[in-house]
Image: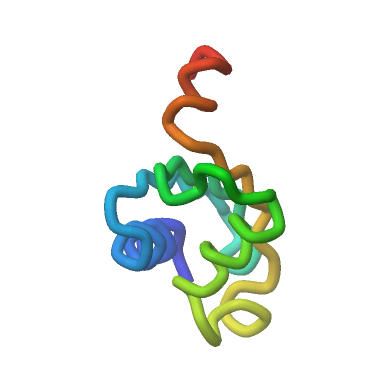
Length: 80
């Protein structure tokens, strides 16, 4: 598994989302996902939305995925 494939799956599964995925060992990854679809949702619901885009890869080919999920407005407020 590679970071680019995970990025593609997330962005296809959450239309309009922008994902930045990093991971050098092929099983542990970190991702920041920016999506308007996260508006009004708690962090757990946001993470579930991302996990849903990855399906069976979670816990299999992807051993661990650390997530940061923000809306575009939250990203702007953070200076990013």
